Image (tube, rainbow, N blue to C red; front, side, top):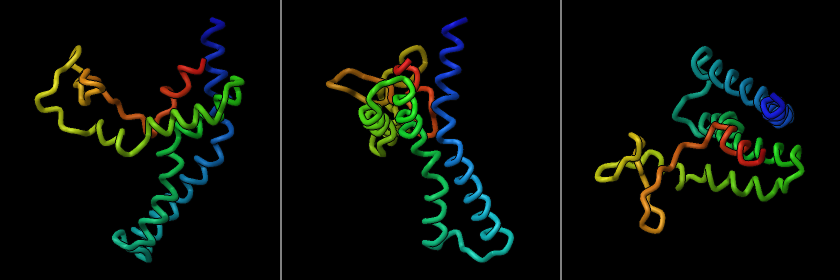
Length: 139
């Protein structure tokens, strides 16, 4: 029971500093949707739309880095090292391996092994938009 309470405390303590950013991103995405689809003031193919959309998505996309940083501070770890590790997990080239074709690759318990690391087939999961993979190793 104590371990479960520690896990919940760590998750909530790590998310509280990020809640304002999540709310701001959601509001920004809502405003963008209003001006794009209701008022038709912004075209979805314009660079204005692309920039504002990236501003709204960035908090969610880089959530593992933000939460990893706050979780490391809460758990008295080095936040910069944890943020760097989370940065590797969401790096675009690593994220691209997740969606890479798995033709000719092996599977392990039905999970496609979609990459090779020094010749060893491994599975690269999708870490963007997630918080648990960066918090659990810290606890």
